[in-house]
Image 1 (cartoon, one colour):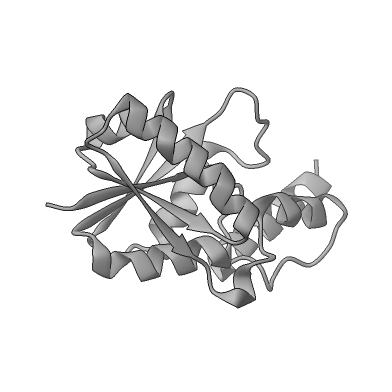
Image 2: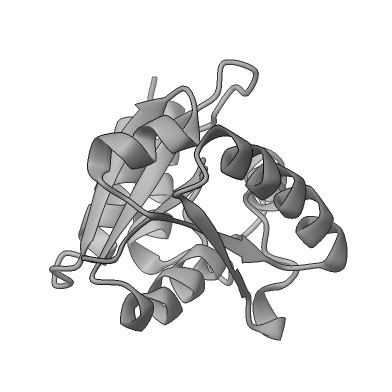
Length: 163
């Protein structure tokens, strides 16, 4: 079985993430989306909420599962039985950074291969970091995130206004 791990923070899930996931489906028998917990990053949204978004988005796709993990990505791959790491690339400098990570992962476990997919041109500027900045300043992110994510964010904002 060809199982891939698509690791990331997904904070929040964007149309760019969805694009990579949907285009990767034909390549693998199973795709596990790994929400990585990084102690050096302070996420805007809880890992549990991010998993919920992914589960809602792909509830009809039996080949997709989501997990939360901490530590080395190759260790998560071993735990879930993934022989592949899936990474999305928007720009050339993304490739340089991702190649360095892929080389490190290969040094840690030569049986796990990294597969890169480039995003569609319309998603090259859609980065979770930029979406979080737009949210922090009250901007409209509807063109960057799926409706299930947008609805959840708007509900959270309403709750915060009443507190």
